[in-house]
Image 1 (cartoon, helix red, strand yellow):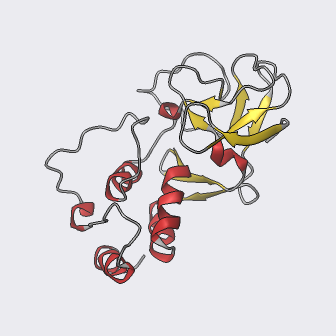
Image 2 (cartoon, rainbow, N blue to C red):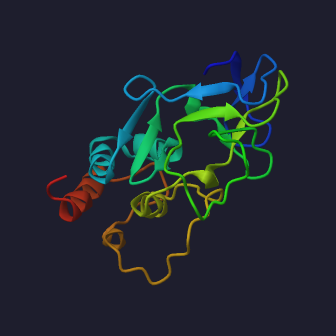
Length: 190
């Protein structure tokens, strides 16, 4: 983070949130994405490889934290992963600060700036709907039972996509060999 902050129980979301310890002026840089330092970027194949090689709990956490950026996903490795979503009361986002038309993603979410003055003690929120999530990420959210009520996900009725063969129970007691077997059948070279 580019401002003083503390992690503590979020007032509106499950889990932790980021609360600024200083007044932040509109336009001030709040979080800087530095690939290879505080974030990693994955394409579809890299995302699948990550999910194949990590425990199911780590895979779910990965999916809860990543955000879409065009055809890729960005995995925040630092406190940026604790920025919670609000579609109404968001106070940080990408530059410029005008209201976004979420039907026209910009493919350029790199850093997060204060879009209004933020008072010390306030939790920071970003509107996740402004991210450009690739279709494969939305499909993975469904397969891993990842909470996505904050995303504008299209309904996927009668889907015949490649993910339909995958089954992931909603519990932590997962037979990892079965999960890996399904991945290996669908993605033999991943």
